[in-house]
Length: 467
Image (cartoon, rainbow, N blue to C red; front, side, top):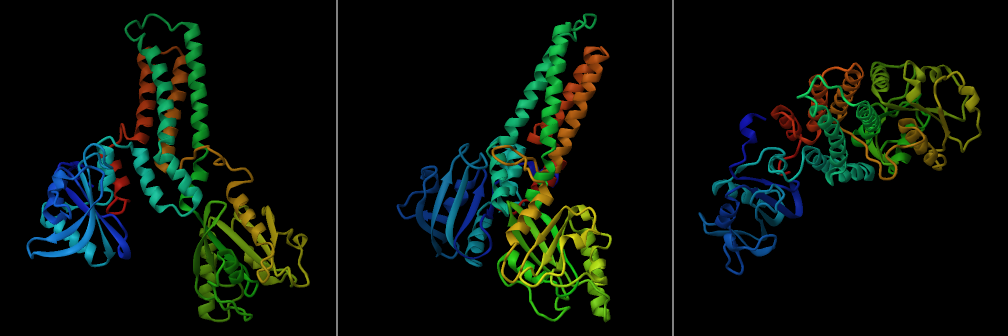
């Protein structure tokens, strides 16, 4: 986005619902001439003009193309007058029948009558610029739309409701209290800060640094909840990798055959395990390749395993270990690996002790993809490998999931640590105030109080059109 993208004195329009067949489509209009645009294309059944429509009330009527004189659709319309709207501006919505063609034709009418196409995320950008929400809440809108699990949804809802903003405001108030004490002495630099006040400030800022550190420590979990975990299922041919995948996704997604080497390409599926989005990749079997195609598949499997954030290494419990089994582990990161001894419904010739050579792996699970035994244990092992046995997000505790939030908090912490060092060194109040103001600026980046247009452009360009 450029500087002109942050002006919001014109009227924009976009389809706010997904393209395609559906019962309803929503065409959203926002800006100073929203009611005028609506009035040119919509006529209520009661004969009211758009300017006379009551705010926040749905009206039945017709969408009309006055140029041709034809009725496009029987629809509902609502106006939401400033400032009580999503964007804080006069806003109108037409709730038409869905489909590919009709909503697009209604949107074209909006453009012909004074609106311009909305850019990605521009409605939410205007909500931020008009003070309807802060930047952290605006980011939560995108997270809410893209949430893949109930846990992702919970975190996004908390942030949209202002949970993170409230925490940041608390941090800012603590910094401001220390800054007020320091700046009270700027005009009298020859007077030292009272020892009791100095001790109180030190303890308060030290406690604040600890609170910030706790919030930063939730980032890894938050990132996993938001983006999911890229997980490769590896093993030699015919150990049941595809069957494990089918059991985890609870449908026949991969072809299962008693003949080794059935899987030649990669199959990807997403599941939720304890609120964590797990992106599963079923890979080709690892063994000495018999032809060029299989060799390419084996090499790609090794590449996928190296790139994966989590690995499910599958072994056949009904067979003793062989050379191909030894190759499975290769050079993968064993700390992020869950070993599965599959085919537990058959006579067992492989035990956990036989896999003692695989050092560094904490989770070993026995399963039967045929009967489903052990699949829930596997899910629990995946969850614990990703997040540990205790989850910081349990209950009402908030987690951060944005890298920019984490970095802003880290900068805040460094500034506050610099302040404590300067306070102990009895530096002048001007130097002390500088560190505290820098901490405030860093916190302000999270809520948007001190954010640049470049950062805003980067954030809102990720939104879909119509949101």
